[in-house]
Image (cartoon, rainbow, N blue to C red; front, top):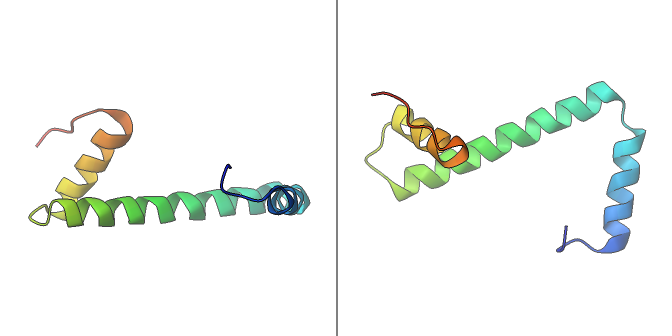
Length: 70
């Protein structure tokens, strides 16, 4: 977190410590979904002729270096 002020990083860490496990899991899932939406949007802009399926396949390639069939 090089772009975060030390005070802000400490406050965020304290907020995470106060959360229960279920709430931390929900936040992590929401962040993951947000990342996927942003990544798919970026891929769609880079390859405007790609279908949603092709965009998702490209995301799998970018993340895992696995080419999906089809």
